[in-house]
Length: 228
Image (cartoon, rainbow, N blue to C red; front, side, top):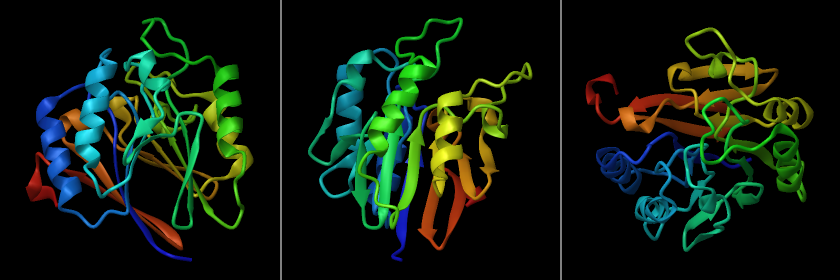
């Protein structure tokens, strides 16, 4: 089973400096692919597309899902060149089968791209079609699974998705990459599935992930090089 090295970001929220730093890290690294788990540019779909294309360049494939703060138009864009949408879709990189889900469950703030749990479950089932069980399965979801360490907001409530949790329980992916809940950066697990909330890229956060046998995750920050 071959190794795959990927770099993952989420929650840029349009921060121009964060994009420039991320682009430098991507274009000087040993990555097989890039994952961006949503909240790319608040409300502005056209700018989000330009930012994603700049991040990917011409050589590193980039896979993204829109976040709840992204324009709904971004959820309808399949990508271009080396940029590929995973929202309700799948892709294969080496021996890894990637599936994705964007948005978040409806909440009290009426953000631009919310997806009811029933629709989220349908999108995930659509994305998993054609999965070859000999591959490693990786889910890129803006919203973490419900009732984990990674969806816990400061007031003590869980802001994750039951559809994502149900998908993890049923299909047992090797890895889930998510964001959405900025304060819940970190690692958790559901059985053998490694769960990662990368922390917001607008604050310099990203993760370096290697899939070879076990899943290896290293948290990094391009604003704090002394922590490397």
